[in-house]
Image 1 (cartoon, helix red, strand yellow):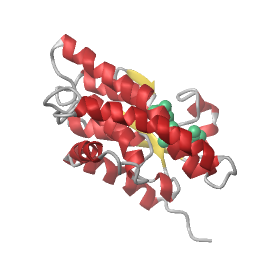
Image 2: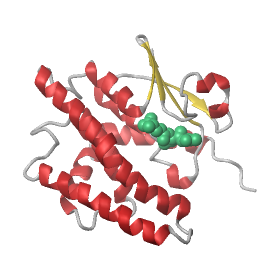
Image 3: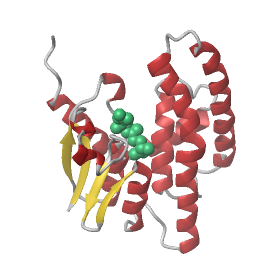
Length: 218
Ligand SMILES: N[C@@H](CCC(=O)N[C@@H](CS)C(=O)NCC(=O)O)C(=O)O
């Protein structure tokens, strides 16, 4: 069995971006069926969920081998057993792990500083000044990533891996705010990854849940 814990519903700005999408995408790429365990924003605070995800977040993933949290760890776990997401050779597998950490540790925090400030603190008096420096930091990282990807379709040579899945998941956050204007090559890379049918299926699966749990208008 494979089970993904996700939210019943989130506000519009988050729909299509909740991080269970990464897990759904990995499972779709691997061709592995799964069931959903849906929770709301009260249930995420309850002891039984905190025992599964200490930070009151989603996703959580369960399969016959055990239970995991953190989307990156889950995607790598799924990739371990999936040739669609992970090369066979040991050195190449280790490179995928390097790039997975790079996506989540070297790129995502800078992206989150910008997008989180825009979404949650856009009106704050300090936002404009902070965003200027946060954007500069993010763009410095994106420039380095762009340099690495020059002449490559994917992070490691010819083929899509779990690392591209995570990197594209991070880059999509920038794309929605027009942050790719200076990086058309990264926009093309992100598009190449998210044009995959497995991504479309994963996105549809997430959005279908939200549509089914849309709160009644007040
Ligand atoms: N590092 C975690 C982050 C998970 C995360 O940010 N989850 C969000 C939804 S995308 C969440 O559940 N937020 C609710 C909260 O923090 O209270 C991962 O990648 O799994």
